[in-house]
Length: 399
Image (cartoon, rainbow, N blue to C red; front, side, top):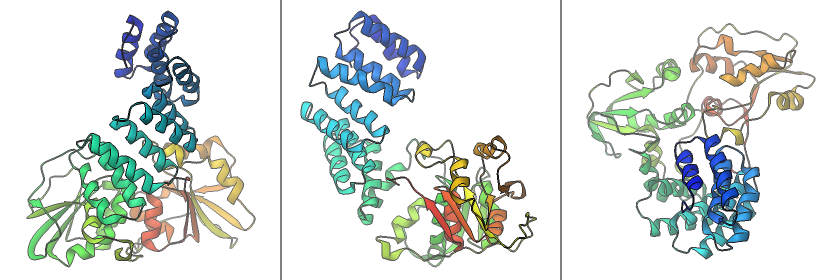
């Protein structure tokens, strides 16, 4: 994006420091100063999309393309905004126009692959990401996205090779760890530290691999987030459980928890079966509904810090409208700031269980008292599955 005017340069500088309001004002000044600048209109669209206003960005990209029909940046940015709005087929067409204008643009193939992912067209996504990597082999971001596309396409053995690119990256920065990297070798004299990473749900689904690990080595130490520590200790999952943030013990080897499926699961047939956890036998003082109704737990949002949470969260009112039926008692298992919706919507026919739940061990005990959980995608779904409790997970089109 060339900075053709002073205002355009100022807009770029504000954009690079994430000052959307200043960037928008400078970009508007730039297009007022030079209305025939495709770069100016394109940048204005980029700023609006970055500020969370993709629908407003569309006419500015289109104005840029009226000025310069072969502006690859405007085409691909238009495609990104269309994908944000769920217009995936239009997005794919826009990215193809961008590539036609600039066939050697690695980022353009990356954007095309992301659009294919949104359309659940996994093989085409893999192809697009691979073309991007041919042009820019060092892109860890594209390799990560290709790993996800390969997993979705069922090509797991290939996917795990790319999946390890996360180690040392922005989402999983390097830190001092004891011993060497464990790659699956059997050594009954060896000790292995399983290193915590990613979300709470990721830890829970990775725990199904711990018996396989323990069968190959002499001692297993499990690092986990504080919310999971009591549950992990109650399950006898490892010889020692270390809370994340505490000093790490010595070990012969270490392995990141989400690398375990890459060692043990080359295909779907090799997934260890569920249930693989048991609800702890601990007293939890829960409210009781004494009318014999179906006891249904609900969760309407995952973590608000998760980038794609808006694609999986729903309003509490939608849950009450859909599932608050005669003969059904609803129980909230919603943690985090979205729990405030219970107060904002009073009176609401939902019993809040979360004041009685201090950690995931309490939550597991509570799940044993419910007949069903209906929820959006979050860690609790993994806990239900691990315990063998009935759960309905509401997923977006591209899960």
